[in-house]
Structures are given as structure tokens and as C-alpha cells.
Length: 606
Image (tube, rainbow, N blue to C red; front, top):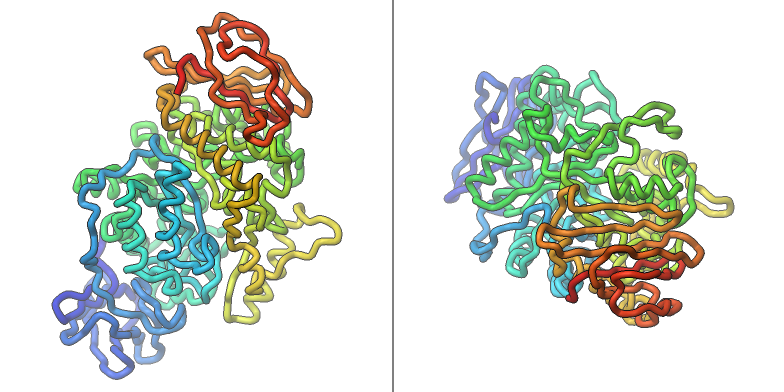
């Protein structure tokens, strides 16, 4: 990596470093009064050590005596994305997580949340107050949506423009460190969603410092970040420093990398591979596992394959196709990309092969798409029935609880939590939250606000329904509509929460659920019924029968050991229509399953 950038405070002085190769003069202006000239090296880095600087001091960078801008590597923006940057002491004196040994990806049960809407207070402190609740649910990993400084106080986080600065309205740098520390004290791993494929449109001053973007490629958000063009060594270093800061200085356990397919890099060593190498070295130094999970829609295992297979060595990746196959069956929706799904063989293949389109023709894309993931273990893939994208990128932001029956909700939860993949829940789904999660922003540029409104209406036009008005992203009410209700008292909500706790308990306690090699898991498709067999090398067996049909169905057990019923989603205790008569021990014989139900059997009791 190149030289460290940003403001580094130590012992009443601060070292300032900024990369601006095409500028002739760069100064730091501290507290709008004191000017300090920076010296330029032969790579375009400007640097100086300033005495008598204290944490809390504000500063701006003056470029060629003409304009002042925030520091692109700022770690604090208390005045917003257009205001001065702030010096902070990066050392945190309250760490108590020395005994924390981390979690490997195959152990994770992930809970994705958005800081601003998870609680009424919308801060890191609010999450701390809910950690005992998450523990009681069975969660051992939380993943928060991006927290790098964005315009205003309402945003999903993907409009961040200061990658190193923690959103001030959430609690800033120390607030995030306090949250991570509390998580580790309670045995919860912490993942952060980061965006290395684009920058937000408001407050993005990077181009005034250097060629951070390139015209060689375009992305859905405009020019691509410059990872392989002239001067790209320094841009790569900028983002590598960012990733390592989160993992080292903030003690994070891993990063979720947004839309890695939009990171345009055709150099000899892809940025992601360089990132994985740097993280491996840090992992060895810290002596605990660190996780890199990519979001990709390419159905390409290259991102997670080792270097000797031409891969980029990420730990794992999200699998949207599992969601699409499950959602299309559960809801019968066929709009947009759901048109490629909707048949039971799609869902069966998502369970068995991971990628549905693995080198076969995709009617929606009108081309052959994807490649096989069969050489990769199940635990390299994250699956979900809901997430921020799949809810929020619907016109009304409606959750699955508003689209399907209570029985289908339980079945969808079981499909995710009993699968051999790494499961991820989206905040509130565990108690069947009914409030939407909608798209919201708080930009200050009127033209940008109007462009976002128009774009929102057109980009997802295939989800629109007659008579419905697209929620205004800029409206504070849209944001408030998306804040969790925490309605845990209603009978259906309370019982759904207990149902999730039961599923997670089975996942944690049953030995067969800890084996994620493909040879130890089989899937059978019988009409609308998927039968999953999971086992380990000691003979422990779990069978999950998932009826996705609207009719009662039967299944004939043959040559099985004595089986015990662990769960029947149709039982009256789960507010279902009632179990079908069967003996407790089910080694042979016919099983009858209610519509949209799951039956879980095992040769051991829990």
C-alpha cells in the first residue's frame, strides 16, 4: 500500500496527509484560523505534522489557494458532508474484548439491520439496548448497512461520500466502537456493509483531489472508481486502508462488500484479491477469523475461489437466486427478474446446486448465464428470504409478511434457517414486522432530490401497481414509516418470534446442521414437496419436509431409522391448522403434510 492518508492525532500534534497529485499548493486550515502548508512528495502526497492540535479541532483542506474542501479521508464530519472535517484520537480506551476469538463464516447466523430504523432513537446506542433481545433470538452475528458519512440524517447508507467517517448522527466513531465492544462481550460477531463500487452524488469531492474515477467504464451510478487506470495504485491504497481500518482499529469481524460485480478492475491482480491478501495478513496478526462477503449477481464462484483456481479469495457471497426462487414460489410473483423463476425445480436447484442459472439460458436476460458452484461448500453462501434490497426496492417497500400467509411465512423461515447455507434475517422478520422498509434520503440539493424522485418511479416500474403512488424518498414520513414497530405482544408476532427461536435452536443444537459439505446433504423433489436430508459422519440425521403446495400432500418414508418429530409448523402451538395424525416415531410409513408447512424429523431428540 501507499502512504497512509488522513489526520492522525498523537500527543498534542497531528499528522496530516492527503493525495492530490495535480495540485500545486495544499494547505490545512485549522479552526478556520490557522494555516499550515503541506509538503509534496514525488507520488503526489502532501504531508505535514502540526503541533498544538487537539481532538475536536475542525480543519479543511485548501487546494491551490482557491477552494477549501473536507478531507477525503476524514474520520469525522460533524458539520455534514459539506462541512469541515474533525480531528479525533483514533485510540479507544474502553476496549474490553481481548478474549474475543471471533467466528468463522460457517458458524454465523446473521441479522441485517439499518441503524436509523432499527430503533426509534436510530443510533448505535439504540442497538446496544437490543443486543440481549438478539441473543435471545439466537443471533450470533449482526451486519449493519453502511455507516460512512452521507448527506443529512436519513439514508440507506449507499450514498456515503466519506468512506472513513462514521455517520455523525448515528454516534460517530466512538459510538460504533462502543457497539462493537458490547457485541463482542456478548459473543456476537460484527459485520459492516461497505461500498467500494461507487460514491454518493452529494458531497463527493474526490475528483477535486485526483483521478479517483475513470471514464473507461460506466456503472449504474456513473463513472467507475479507478482501480486499474493511471494513478490507480493510490486509489486502491485508499480503499485498502479503509477496509483494514474497520477490521483493525474498529475490531470488526468482517465486511460485506456491496455489488462487487460493479468494481471494474481488469488489471493483473484484481482489487478484491489484493484486499483478500491484506486481510489474510491482518488475520494472521490478530489471530482471529476475518470475513469478506461479496454481493454479486453474476453467479460466478470466481469471487470466492482460491487463487490457484483464478479466484479472488473472498470468504463468501450472497445468493440472490435462492431468494428469487423462494419468493417466486411463495408469492407467485413473476415480474422483472422473478420471470426467470416460479417453478419448483428452480427452488430445488437453489437448494441443491446454489446457482439456478449455472451456465444455462436465462429468458429474462436473454442469454446463457452463470457457472457452477458445486465445488464450493454450502457455507460459502449467504441466503435469505428478505433483505434491504429485496424489500426496499419494491415500490411500496412491503415485506413478505404483507404478501403471503402466516403459514407461508413460517415455511419461508424454515427454508432459510434449515438450509445448509449461512442464513441471514432482515430486521423485524423474526416477529413478522408489518411496517415496510422503504427507500429514503435527505439530500440538500433540490435538483438531486427531484432526480432521485423521478429515478425511483422509473427504475422499478415493473413493481408498480395501479392506484399506488411511489413513496417520496425525501419525505421524513417515508423514513418514519420504515422504523420497526417492535410489536412483540400480538399473538401472531409473539408466536412467530418463538418459531424463529425454535428453528435457530435446531440449527445450533443438531449435529447434522453443522456439516456443510455437499456430500452430506441431499434434496428430493416430489411435486410441490422438497425433502432435505442432512447428516454427519457419526450417523446423526435431520430430515426437513417442506410442502410449498396449496394442497395437503403425502410422503412415504422408507428404510429410515427411528425418527422423532422436532417441529411441525402446522401445529396449533404455532397457530397452525393442526398436525396431521402420526406416531411419534416415524421410521416407516406415510407422512401427511398440511399445505405450506414444514415437518422436521430426526433420529435423535434435542
